[in-house]
Image (tube, rainbow, N blue to C red; front, side):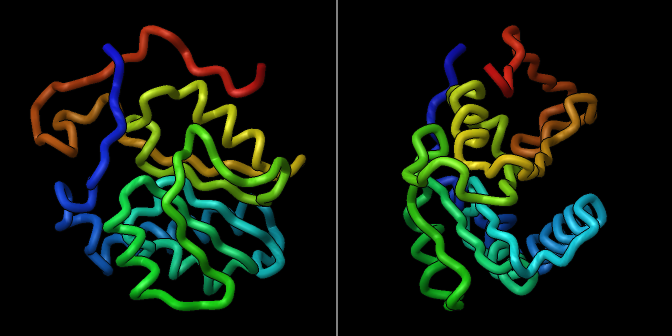
Length: 171
């Protein structure tokens, strides 16, 4: 089964995509995990968030990182982000995670949180992520637990998805 792009995701899941408290909580966790892993000051690092949606998380991240760029295919969510959050070190763009418009080796950190399962081609996503990540940079992934009793988008019990083809990060 081929997955398709999920345009207008923020419309379908507006309750969670625009939830300031929940999205800020997730951003705080990201900062804590990345800071603990790197054991360095984050203010000089550049960060790309793939699937930034409404930019709430990116706004918080911009308080800790030197440069934050968020991308998403959801035009309405990106418009909200750009109209709501205005900082010199923060930019949000409509872009395709499987065909990023950024140069190679640009970002110190790439965040891919809760979007992997929505991508039509996981291998292409990983190739693009690796391409834009600086040598020695880190990727932060977050995803639902496939063993959860309920799938969190549809609240259906025991809906567990398995990929028949494993994703390869390096060719």
